[in-house]
Image (cartoon, rainbow, N blue to C red; front, side, top):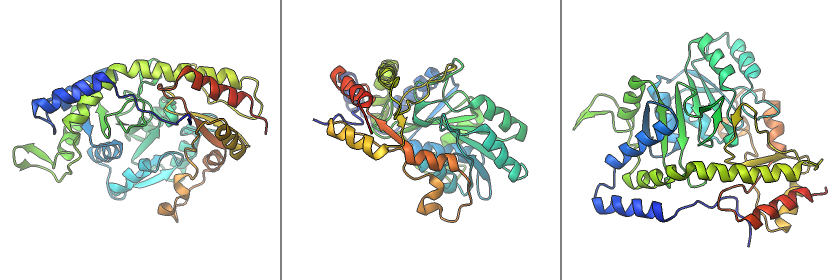
Amino acid sequence: MTVQMADPRIGVAEVDRLVDVAVGGRIADGPEVRAFESAFAERCGVGRGVATSNGTTALHAALTGLGIGPGDRVVTTPFSFVATANAVRLVGGTPVFADVDAETLNLDPAAVRDTVDALDGNVDAILAVHLYGLPAPMTELRTIADELGVPLIEDAAQAHGATLDGRPVGSLGDAACFSFYPTKNMTTGEGGMVLTDDDALADRVERFINHGRTAAYEHADVGHNFRLTSLGAGIGRAQLDRLHEFVETRRRNAGRYDDALADQPAVTAPPDPSNGRHAYHQYTVRTEHRDALRSHLADSGIDAGVYYPVPIHRQPAYDGVDAQAPVAERAAEIVLSVPVHPALRRDEVESVADALAGFDP
């Protein structure tokens, strides 16, 4: 059997919550969703949570709530899943790509400053991604955002359970957006969440995802139906109880791979910062011999994935976008992710570690 890249952990607790919600009859938006929002916000040390239908709608709703719209420029990373930039476009804004740091592959604050300077400071928000579960340099980005007087947004779709300087990811920006897709560190099947300490912003997001509703059949704004179901929230509440366990297992698996790569000259392990806690949504190595390593892993029955083979500014949907991001473009050529999820058996972890250590291009 192949060692798979992902294997969502759905157990008895999740099934029990689903049954409770289904029997209760409130399977769409309702008290279960409110309970999940409160619990997730509390876990991340934030005042308010607004659950959404997925991570992309969370980004869309947060940007809208922050007033980002047509003509607005949002500085973001070109090295992420395309949804990060698409959400900016969906609200009518323009994603402006700054390059990433060569070690972390997260937004490079120096590149952000250069990008801002090239635009004479005319930007309206900064949208940082915690790539692969590694916290972005939020302290430096916060300084830049404050100097400009613009909001700083976290795309935390891959970083449930990560921390920076002792603070949970999700509490580091003016708004944070999570995804609960099945491959993420915890899941609701599909789903997302916007977190913020700004009550007025949370109220705007709540209205936007519910047709602009302020009361029964009273609609103050034009909105969408971006709501999470109670069924999804039930799964999410059970998963949240296991999030610490999930992340600790990912970190333990990652530590074993780090050990295996300690004397491997052809493959570089991902960084694990001293001032943060990597949540290892992906364990992403770098190698000049990616195709050979991927083939070597396949020969050992191990799946591997490339996240992401094409930077966003090189995607067909972004033809004509003027962006200089050589580090991101180089990263797209050399990154490879191996299974690190908590469903791996110990023998599977050892198989991955042995395969990485034994790679000889």
